[in-house]
Image (cartoon, rainbow, N blue to C red; front, side, top):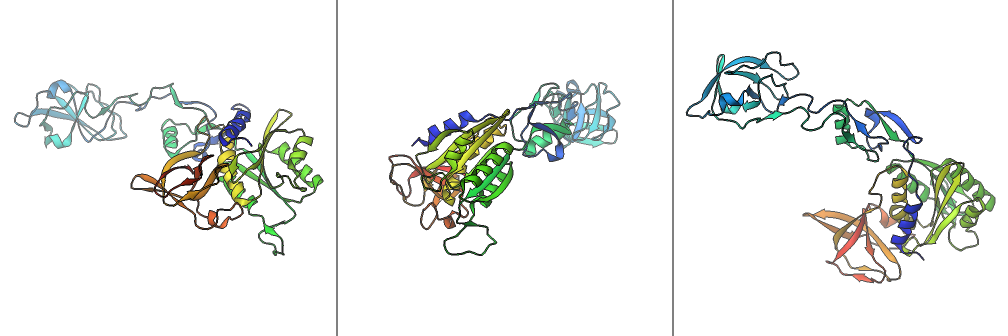
Length: 411
C-alpha cells in the first residue's frame, strides 16, 4: 500500500493542466464569477482614472492654507462647485477654493482637500479652520493601478471582488478555461436507482448522485453514465466511452479483488496506464488511478471503492486536488487542513491513515471538531450527513483524547 501523501504526489505529478490556448473560451463579465482565468488581464486605463476627492469638502492649494488654525482661519473665494460625475472645467487660482464632493475630479491647480467639517461657509467665501497635510484626501491618478500592468493573472478563480476590478477596468469579456467534463458511473448488479422498487439484496446507488454533486460543486460538468452491470463487455464499453469523451472519469466499485471486479483489467486492455491500486488510507484503501493518452487527449481515471463513505473520502482527498490542477487552477490544489480541538475521543487501529468524519466549527476564534455519532463504517452513509470535516489520525496513532488537538481536513 502506498502512503497517502505519496499517493497524492503521484496523482498530481500525472495531471496535465488544460492548455490556455486550446482549452479556453470567452465569456461575458456577467458570467465570469468562479471561472478560472486563462489569460493575464490588463487595462489601458490608470485607476483612479484621474485625480479625485476622497471626501466632501473644498479643493485648495496647500500653500494657501498651510498656516490655517481655528483662531486664525484662512478665508478663500469659492470659485466653483464640482459634483461627482462632472469634469473640472475651471483651474484654481491662488486664494481660491472649489466646493468638491466625494469622487469628483480635482481641478487643475488644487493639490489638497479640506473636509467640510474643518470649514465654515459664508456666501461666496469659505473659512479654513485647520491646516491639512499636503495632498490630504486626494486620490491620485494611477495610485491603485497603472495602465498596462498585470491586473489579474491566469489560473485564479474569479471572485466577486475580481468581478468588481474587471468592471472598473471596463473588461466586458475575458478568456477563461473551459469547464472540465467528468464522466461518472457505478458498477454492480446489486444497484438500483432511487425511484425503483427495492428488492431483497439490492442497494440504492447513492454514489452517482453524490459524485455528481461533488463534481458540480467544483465547477466541472458531470456526465452521469448510469449503472453498469458486472459484465466485462458492458464495463469495457463504459470505460471506452468515458475515456474518449471526458477529461476525468470516476467509477465506483469493481476495484477490489473479487470475481466481479473487472475495472483494472479492462483499463489495461484499453491502453490505460495504472499508477496505483492501493493506498494506506481508511476508508478508501482500494483506489485505482490511471491515465489514458489518446489522439492528444489526456484523461485521468479514478476507480473508487463502492462503499459510499469511502467514495466521498477518496474524492475529497485525491480527486479534488487532481480536478483543480487539471482545470487550470494555478495553485492550492490540495485539501485544506486545519488544527482543531476534538470534543470526543478519537480512535483508530494505527495501521492506515484514518479519516473520521464529523462537524468542524469555529468557536471563539478556534476550530473544534465534533465526531459524528453512530458507527464509523465505510458503508454507513447516514451519519455522513452535514459532514464538514474529516479528523486525521496518522499511521501509528491509535487514539486522540477529547480536548486534544487534531488535524482536520476541511470540506
